[in-house]
Length: 351
Ligand code: UDP
Ligand code: MG
Image (cartoon, rainbow, N blue to C red; front, side, top):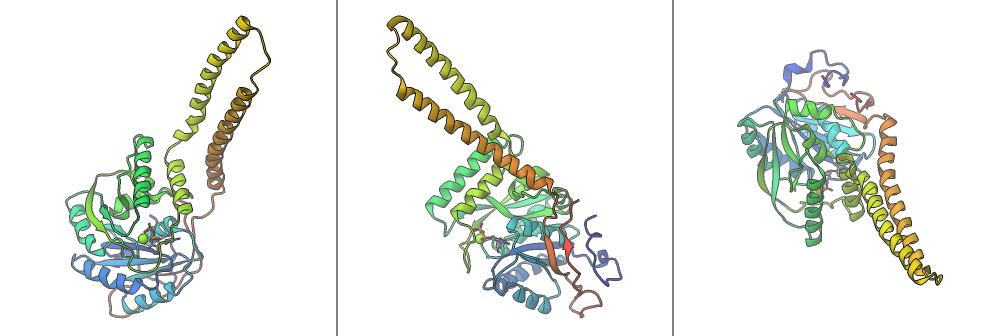
């Protein structure tokens, strides 16, 4: 369904004729150092599976030579497809762009370019998926190269999400690294919201799934693009796009403060009746005012977070813009007309 809307200029035959069974989607932002090594390890792992495959490298507006490296990989290996986004859109959207362009008829693997998700785990994902689940997701056994604080906050985040999530369960210690069946991918692609918390979207889609345990390695080269501010924002994104529970905080805070006020008010009235009114109470008055002011600002902020997201969604903008798309091309027999063609800017479809 979503294939036909990508115009492949000059491609005469329907591209279903040479659809690979598996697609691997790799979002990359400033990954020039690791990409060649990544591709080598990926190809070795994929070739062992025995299914026709392609890999879609999505260049998410890198500032280094990532695109040139991708094009070189494409020139050397026709199983490579390149999607060059018009600027940096962020990992979640780059991933979506890759999924949109994945032609794999049976399944799609999502993996990071920095070799933190070892490509060697893919055959294990495939094995789990062949046993009949739609989603085989890689679950981290330990985190190498990550500090105590990062591990602790990640654990806390998963716990909070677990509590708030209600019906939708987020598997813990699980990133985007996974294999999805074609129908799961198609289901996922119907979710076109701007604020894409992928872990939440994966969980929302559901379908039978199974974890595959692996050891997450430290980054092979380059630097992580995450910092604390980004992680905080990702957590906000996760919570606000996943649950409206924080909106209820205002209600309960209001109820609790009202109850306390009632008790305190009665105390004041009784005290005044018994002992007269000595016109004291400035400190308590100030405390109550400041407390209530703080509570009101916090709840306004929470409402603002949601309102901002409503605003962004109502604009209905495309998720991303493609500067150039080079589909993977058949066998090593050479390229046919149209295969190397670059289509003009295409829009991230709003299905
Ligand atoms: N990434 C991306 N766009 C961005 C940031 C990251 O496509 O704006 C890619 C990055 O190249 C890598 C993956 O997303 O393949 C994960 O990024 P990173 O390693 O920085 O995140 P972490 O592993 O720390 O979660
Ligand atoms: Mg990483």
